[in-house]
Image 1 (cartoon, helix red, strand yellow):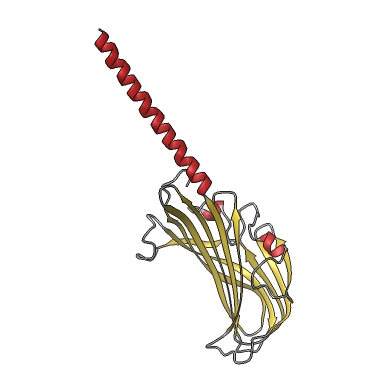
Image 2: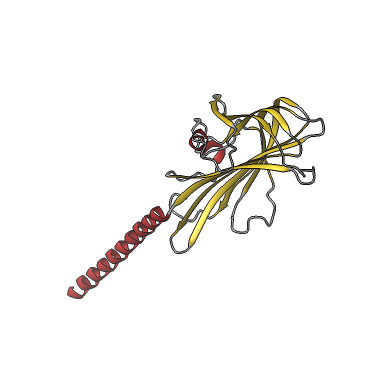
Amino acid sequence: MDRCIRVSLGLLAAVFIVFVFVVSYQVWVEKTYETSLSSTYSYTCTITTDRALSNVTLFLPLPADTTGNSPIVEQFSAQDVAGLPEDWTIILYDTGKATMVRITTPHISPPAGTIPEKPYSIVLSTEIRTDTVIDTRDPINNSAFFRPVWDLGQVSCPSDSFPLSRTPQCYRYTTSLYADYRAQPDASVNISSTLAGNNSWKIFEPASNSYTTSIGVKMSGDRQGWSTMNGTLTSSIGSFDAPYA
């Protein structure tokens, strides 16, 4: 009988030790993940032209979530955006369906020597850290995105583009911008914007997951009105083997 009791107590002690170890390990993993986690949005807008533009007014979509909150708005409001020319006037608009920035400037003047093969580009960029884990699986509904989103459709991802991602998801969609400027008939203007949302952490080794979306349009000559921008989205890039990932 005493031997049975000792064996039973030994088994209970072993189970308790294993339980404590598992719980402690889970707590350690979650704590390590939380303390090492960094979530960032990276935004870039590029305006390229091979001819001078005058009396320029642009309404460009800024990434925002479905409630209109945008991680980029504060930077534009404070004009804390790398590459922003001093003579540009910036005004932010929330249309209810989209968050847009109105840019006005008397002119965009490419330097001497600009030709179609070597156009002039203005690149605006900023990176913002956020305290909230970014949803990189469904950014259209749960994270910052260029809105409104039209004609959304899933497409095949390039087979060898994401070797570290288990199940990347690729889409095409459209959105819009407003452009009003004077230019020569043969002027070519390209406007594109890119947003990437990224979560990174380190438990045993560095890991991350992300999504990236880009929109763009090519225009020629004078413009006065709305234009459709073609967009792409790649979501669920990277690792999701972490707590809350």
